[in-house]
Amino acid sequence: MTNAASEKNIRLAIVRQKYRPDGGAERFISRALEALDDQNIDLNIITRQWEGKPNPKWKIHLCNPAKYGRVSREKGFAAAAQQCWEREQFDIVQSHERIPGCDIFRAGDGAHRVWLEQRARVISPLQRFLTQISSYHRYVLQAEEAMFHSPALKKIICNSEMVKRDIIRCYGVEESRFEVIYNAIDSQKFVPATLAQRLASREMLAIPAQAVALIYVGSGFERKGLKPAIEAIASGDRYLIIVGQDKDQKKYASLAQQTGCADRIRFVGVQNNVLPYYHAADGMILPTLYDPFPNVILEAMACGLPVITSETCGGAEFIRQGREGFVCDALDVASLSEYVNKIPSRQENDEMGNAARERILPYTPKNLSQQLVTLYHSLLV
Image: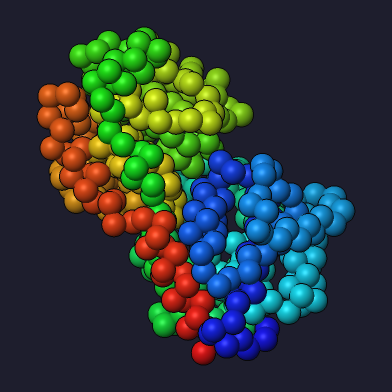
């Protein structure tokens, strides 16, 4: 990498293998890049595939080598991305993929080793064995370790203190190499529902006006904890709106039937605009097995929804028990059920919801931008 004076434009490269606008990492990147547009930063994206329309100011570097399986795909892109940034001699390379040699790694997916630890709690012995011998998981763990121990790595951006602790525990990285930068939220776009919006959204979903409804937002139902969420809903009279998709959706629909709550559950699939669904809800439930800090928690809180989540979710750092929501173990269905029944109708009691919104207000794209720019300049001194 070249040394750049702080007064000249910084040539920044951001590495993301597949950029799709609805992804959590991509929303972080989009908000950061849009906020960085006013700074003296030349923005470059190294990617295999870009979906949607990029800002014309950003330069896209496509690296799409042939692939013959998951490991080949990962290795091929890593090699091509490294070649690209070495050829271009960017001032700073910020990778969102586990590729040794980057200056900054954003650990948006957390530590893969910790995810495997948590997933082992809910899969069969056979699945655990297959995971242990999987060439893909072995490759990811090796790449993760090589990257965290790379002498080129100057900083690790974590979007929660939880992820920072996980990486230190698993890989012994010194604390001085971390920056905790929480995701940003547009609290002018994500706002609490008016009464008219609430009623219109509920009519669309056939949810009674006086009922209490929770929302679950996420694809990858096993990791995001849909099974315990459904089981928690089953014990009371609450409704559940499920936004997202999964190849095993029929299994979860069957669980709703078996537990007797199918009539109170609405599977609505992936939505480009989730706002009307937040507006139909009184709270969020996301008992995720492992999630560094899902953007949907910020969105729900901005909409005035208290959140029920797990101790293995970075979003728990924004929740004081009984004030902005509730936190428990991801598989503790008894506690989840108790907390579901403690979520009040927003129309009758908005105290928790208002506290949730107040909590996220400082986390603006502008503040995110300032934190990133300060970090970039500190690396070029």
